Image 1: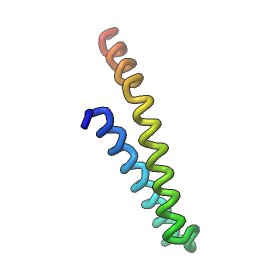
Image 2: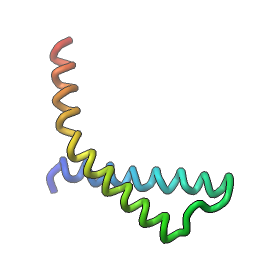
Image 3: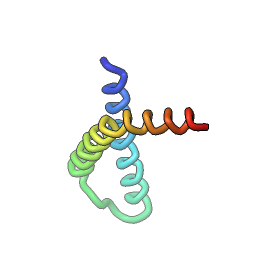
Image 4: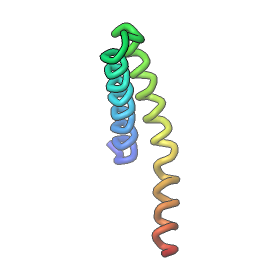
Length: 72
């Protein structure tokens, strides 16, 4: 698997887990906002969107960072 694909998938996993952690915290503080099924579906959507955004922006951020470091 290409490293860029692996990185995007891992960022998607991080996005999904972050959403579920925030949702769990909200549930502990208040009341359940979503059912378990709804939470899993929304977490999947968040994960896919995070992966797509990470895939699209990762090379641009790397180029920007390389230019910034070379300029110093």
